[in-house]
Length: 101
Image 1 (spheres, rainbow, N blue to C red):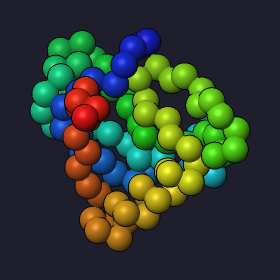
Image 2 (image 1 turned 120 degrees about the vertical axis):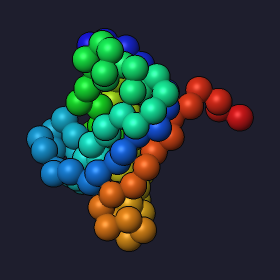
Image 3 (image 1 turned 180 degrees about the vertical axis):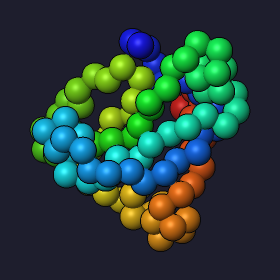
């Protein structure tokens, strides 16, 4: 399951906290594919279990590598979880693209 996070549209649900050593002190965001390469990766190749999660304090760079999850600094994860909780009651949509501009 090594590889990048597939691009596309994802259903995002605020999940449990998990192992704080690996995922940081905040809840994780579980991703389920809706469309695009995300959908193809899950439904054709069985790639699943993607998350957005923390795992490093802002003063402890660099971020550790993952096997397709999106790892962000713990404070950024806290902000993202708060945004999803306040605007969608713990549920939202995330679009992942390769366009960095």
